[in-house]
Image (cartoon, rainbow, N blue to C red; front, side):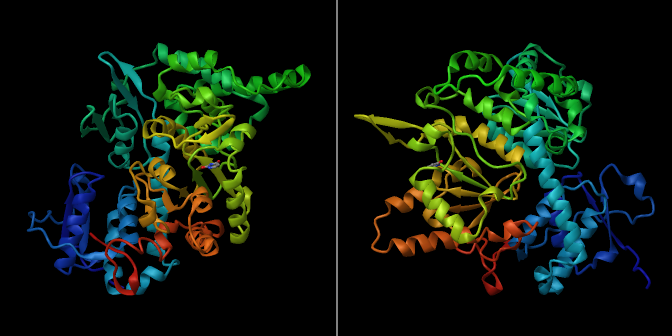
Length: 510
Ligand code: URA
């Protein structure tokens, strides 16, 4: 078959020029230019395309048109992949979607599969950036980090850092781009070299001491560790220099731990000494590399006052790689005493739901937005008090680390506190329940009620309320069985809000 001549050339301003790509797609569709006729170029790559037709002078903008919402989300991520053929692939996908609406329901289509693989790789890359960026202090209370993403993900990931480190002035340098935050606004500049970023400093030495201290040789699983923290990131992680020596010493140290026997358990943790060390360490470098290390760091957290009064921090429960993460509000009285999430009355209701849904508990990761129990004393009773926004914000670093280490395919927000912590903004649970939303890093989040809300609910028909809750939760069942991104596939996505196209499925403008 003869390939049609590429008669039209589009030049994008940069590798991550998503707005330029979408504008070009709108123009090309309006002009009815088939994918085979289009050559995609990048400003600065001109000499690679000597035989390409010269780019067209900027034409008048074309009107937006609508595509299935999940396809627009797919474009948003896949367009940031490093593969130079991505724009051609994605334009072909748009072209075909307009001509063959059934394509949306064909999960085995080769173009779709490739685009989905790209989108997944980009979301993983964004996740890695949120977990492995290490800021170093500069004079003038500024901070700077060097990072080497695999894809063109800096612009898309920078808002996460602006929210997380809103009070700091920081810059993230990468080979392709740099991002700057002055406490008010994000700005982007050209790429940089590794030498442009500062070297190790005294704060880092404290972090290394802390990392070596929390490293548990008896829990060493090198293969799992390298899966969670791939070697390609090690060169920019200060703690990576400790990994080899600590691994080599691990057998010897764990032998000594066995010989020494068990120590007495402590019911209340003497937090002061550890907290002091943590306070001296720059908070933004706190990125434990394993769930065990994270558990210790969380236990020592005194970023808000709740921790002082609780028996212990209640860390999440489950394994790295669990398909689904369920996030509650905060431990209750019984969770606080036992050190495990969801073991009190709300946990029992959740357990009943899990059984009816057929979700094995060990396929899940259960955790809370806030890790310590907040309560007020009434006589001898400790009554649950909802954590304030500041307390939840102080705790959100631990949840983010859990997400980075567990890497679930999706999360379920049980109630408003969890939804706010996961999504970074307030969510009206009554309206949003049963809907898939998406975080900035691409993680799909299903919002629903907290089990305690069902226990408290003043309703003549608690059975119906429970059934409605199960119906919300059931939308996540496909995640347990497949490898797919739920928000890309579930027809319930956005079913109560936003524009809907034929068949009631959500559509978004491109
Ligand atoms: N409520 C929560 O949100 N989490 C628990 O772990 C227990 C009750």
